[in-house]
Length: 478
Image (cartoon, rainbow, N blue to C red; front, side, top):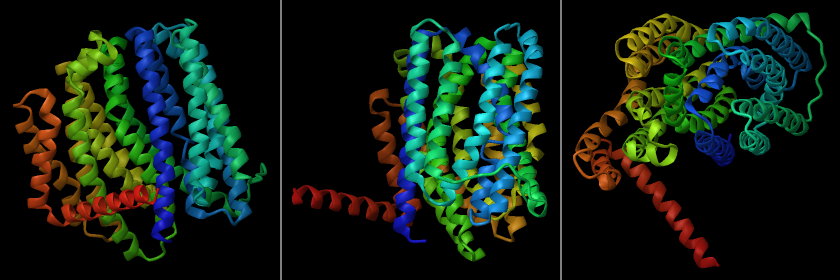
């Protein structure tokens, strides 16, 4: 595949991710003004159950289509049918547990919220298959437009409902409107006819891949969402509101970059036939990603301080700042590790992903509980940073490279080199007034990169020079 095609698709994937995330952030900023922390806590609790149900189908069937292709009708119909069956089953399960959850949390409305979320799970199953078709065909422009329009519908429906005084129901209304819109648009763009039929000769291959991805998703859910669940159970919904808002803010960059890179990356990795090409491609991706992401997260830490939180959300949200440092470490590792998971899925090895996520899940949950008991939401953020941000990252790359017969050393060097370089600039910058901290950080960071990673510095210098030259040429041509 030509580099120009990869860059073009990467642009559309990034554009869609940035626009979607910006709309979600804008919605959260406004809703934080309209709703109380306790109301955020109610919907945050409901989203925990939604996330657990959605992990079994969102992306699972779509990833198989990206891996296998769209040429064989047997695989398409079987995947489509199994995906819808799973979605309907999960909707029923969510409906059955809704009364129990409502009584446990003493939130009567949770019954109806989860019933509607169950309907959305069916929509998610339908959309996942069509999204997989678009990704396999590298139709990222159509995919980005679908997600953007659905996000507009979701945001305006949510804000409009909140202005009408519908409290946390505004999230439910907005989400449902967004899912319906997304399903209709992706069905239109994919132009792929599916039949409700399961072919016995390919059934097990589809199921084994989906089960491997489901196992990965299950562990993924535990390690990436159980911290919110532990906070809600041990510390209450108000603490959950603080922690969840910090989580949403710190994961913004990760959500944007990982969504774009994973979508394009898996499509590209799946179409590379030579194993050496895949290894070299992943090395380059990790190298470029680490030196881009590490300073971005460091700047986020310096810019999003108590004054910023107070200005954007109000003084009652200041406790959010206490958990941001630990969550930023986790956000960086999550972005880096997502590229490894995409490679394993592209190679038809979702079982390795499942092993990686399920093996760390019990350790992560225990660390979250201990952290919450000892030091509240700050303790949870520290546990997340140490267990998931550092220890699990090392284990993931060591075990995955062992399975693939690759050297883990060269990957781990790039994983940790860039964030280690950012430590000294951060420490020095914090000793100066807040207004000059970001600029001072960038100056020191670029100096250290030039000194310790000259190759990377020259690559970025060359890239920025080309961009500047093109802009000047375009401006002069006018």
